[in-house]
Every structure is written in C-alpha cells, then in structure tokens.
Image 1 (cartoon, rainbow, N blue to C red):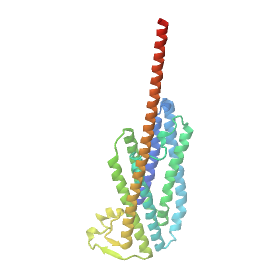
Image 2 (image 1 turned 90 degrees about the vertical axis):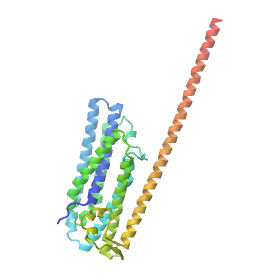
Image 3 (image 1 turned 135 degrees about the vertical axis):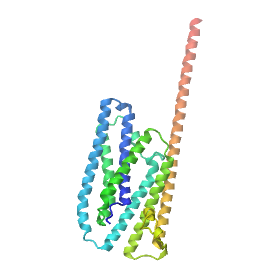
Image 4 (image 1 turned 30 degrees about the vertical axis):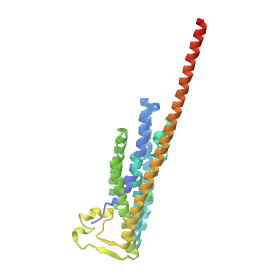
Length: 325
C-alpha cells in the first residue's frame, strides 16, 4: 500500500501556516483597533491590502518550491536504498528541529509569554498601506519558503507522494489554529492550559522524530546493540493501535542509540522550555519596572501640577486681600 500521509510533513506545513496566520491576524487586529484606520473606506483598503499581499507572497513561495522539487524528484530515482534511508533519517532530524522550534514558540504565539521583539501591535498607527503590504509580503513569503527548506529531504528520499495530502491536512490545521488564536486574542481568552498541552505534544513529537531519524541512520550505517524487544503483535509499532504512538517515539524494540537519542533530546527540550520561561519572566519583570517608573513619573508630574495650582490659588487670594485693603 502506497504511503500518502506523513505526520512530520503535516506538522511542518501546519507550523508555518500557523505562524503566517498569526502575523496576518496581528496586522488585522491593529487596523481594526487603531483610531487612524476607523474610516470605513480606508479600513477596507487596509484589510484588502493585507489579504492580497499575503496571497501573492504565498503564491510566489509555492511556485519556487515546485520549481525546486521537480529536479529533486528526478534525482531521487538514481539514489541507492542505503542513501535513501540515510536521507529519510536526515529528513526526520530536520523535521524534529522544526517542530521543536514550534513547541518553544507556542507560549509566545498564544500570548502567554511576552515577545522580545516589537510585535505588530506596537507599530506606529500612522504606518502607510504600502509599508503594511511590504511587511506582510515579506513575513508570509519567509514562512511559506521555510516549508520548502524543511521538506527538501523528503523529495530526495523519494517520499514526494506523501507531501500533497499531508500538506493539505497541515494547511487546514494551521489555518484553523491561526483563526482560532485570532478570535481568542480578540476575546481576551486565557489559553495557559492550551499552551501547555500543545507545547507538550509538539515537544514529544519532535523527540520521537529525532529518535526515529537516528534509528533510520543507524539501520543504514550499522545498528547499535538492541536492549530489548517486545515479542507481541499488540505492541508492534507497525500495527494498530500502537502505530499511532510511533511518531511520538514509541517502538516495540529499543537500541542503545534510540534510548540515548530519545532521552537526550527530551532533556534538551525541557531545558529549552525552562530557558524560555526564565526569559519571559525577565522580560515581564522589566516591563513591570518600566510601568512602575512611568507611574512614579506621572505621580510626580501630578504633584507638581497640584503645587503650581495651589500656588496660583494662594497668589490670587493674596491679590484679592491687597485689593480689598
């Protein structure tokens, strides 16, 4: 039976489409909330400019991906089975890095962590439509073009057939998630729980892909010692129901390299998430200090104004007394 779906390809597409959708949503939110864009005709032009720029940039990126994919498909036909197995292992390693990046970004994308960079909400409300279109086009082209970079090994491994269907599912998932985040952000929903679940699942998926990629490469180049084998059809990772958990690192047998790769990558994922958490705390405390200092300055200014006002009152009272005298 021909394989037509790959969860790694699906997740790569979902990740990039999600990020592109969030960028578009940020700019739409700013225009809808900005007093500078409340004129109906101007707002309509701005929203249309965002949509057309995003569509055009995505189209250009997809054409570039297709232009590169054709020669790679032809090249893959002349590769030996061992080389294809190695390239397939590399594709899983690349996918694991891409999905780990998504796992680390999820708390920020859902608004749980503050961003170090100025997001779209902080740009000058007087930004021109041309500047908006350039920003949108560049960011969307970059996100879609990254898909091509991440799926190149799949073409070389002769797995081009899994890409179309996996891409469609990934695009639908990414777009749906992006729209959901856009709506939730506008409604000010608390998404801490969702952030934890999504970051955990994507982190586990990245770990499983890394372990699986390492195992494919050791199978082609020479396996390490097998530590255990579960000899039971129910637990076979190539059969239902346990094959569902295979992308997340499950296997009915384990080699030394698989064990080391799985737990090393899992530890790295946890460390990076903790580092991101510490970064977020630092940024948030810095923002709180800035707000506190701003409040102090505002209070000082208010006190000075009150003193000047009281001084003016006293001066007026003295002038009245002198006039009465």
